[in-house]
Image (cartoon, rainbow, N blue to C red):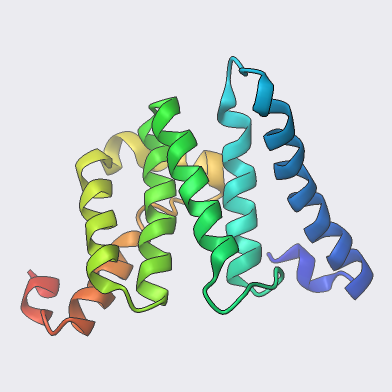
Length: 157
């Protein structure tokens, strides 16, 4: 369930602040140091994305915070070289571009995701890392983008 929905406004702000603090601490620490395993940041990226998605983090009109978050996630996940995290990051990018009406960019993100994602190999690991296979949800965003571009026949095929 959505735990933060049952929290008071003050606790919701503290809850959100703790996620933002986590990414700030990570970024400050890794500025001058190299971590052996940078994967500790991936759940933080995903958690912040969920908070953004549900309006718990205010953004400017251009959704700069969200796009920067996704860009950082993709960079870190690509460097980590694990399709579990890289495809999750690409799924976030696909969802973002679909949401802001940049359907062709969303499809480009999806195409990269599709090259990496093997459901039989990755789905369980993604669900374990993120609570559900959020990468598989990109298939729905792909369908929406194709429909918005008038390419329904490709969507159904």
